[in-house]
Length: 53
Length: 349
Image 1: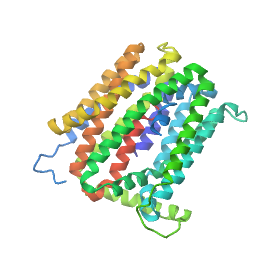
Image 2: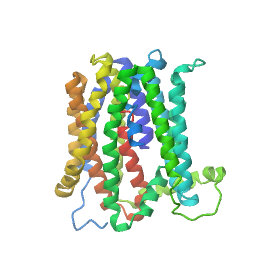
Image 3: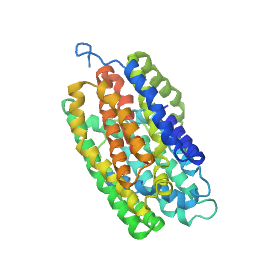
Image 4: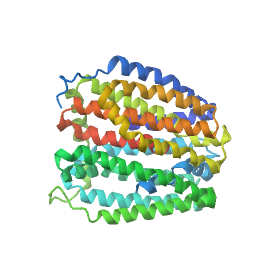
């Protein structure tokens, strides 16, 4: 899924560039917000006692 | 191979542009999509093939395959039947399909190193990769600046082909670590594909929920990198006005920072935990994009260096986090893919 998303990202980035060259950069900036929220609210770091491996 | 792999990177987009990409503006996107679809196709069965039929034959055959695929890149400017970038597309897809050997190589390294030294061995290998990447971009850039874009890139790709074939030849000396007398059959590749996908999906039922979200974060980050990586060189030349003969300089700070910051960031992850470095990554990415979008050569160099830092922060934190959440027997599929994730972020930057 990661690879498919990367390939799609390249296609979309190239397409947006043909519309307005700055668009891929602005979209990247905008999409960092949900990623940051995912990291903050969904990823829980196990405590030292919980780390089994 | 590390030096060779990086040599064409700075001027790859301009090369495709010169080979007809300027008259068909979606060429870079189509090549990028084909590249990663092919990678996705081989990502699943590679590990199965390596375990079933052994590592050596897969590694050697496919390294020769990658080496020979560079012939398409060398000969592309002479191709007149269709737009010349079509040959780049074919060469790229062949390369990605040949990367089916990656899990075999990863497994062979793991097989050959004592369990208690795998961490050190992995760091050492990563350091060697990082160290030899840096001169590759500089050498490639100097060749292109000296010979001109098309002739220079042909020379670069020819050198890369020779280097890869030499590497493939040296890999003939590898010793097989899995004993299996069964002969490889193509139908096995097809018939085992659903089974391989099923096994991959089953892992997600076992691992903790955080690992799933971590995967979403990684996949989304790959998407974000891809949005701009596909056109950044063309943007720098056509929008920012950075002279083509100076563009390769933008890669040098990034490559250097990836070598020198790798160890300190790894230590930071050990000290402060994984979540903070993981969250720092997207924040630095925003700064990097802002520096690039209206920049000049200096700010673009800074932007690229920050991109290197984003990768280091997110890679180190993600690897550490998954190592303490995923059981050792379920790491195989995840860990080699994570290595490939890291290289994919850099590829075609």
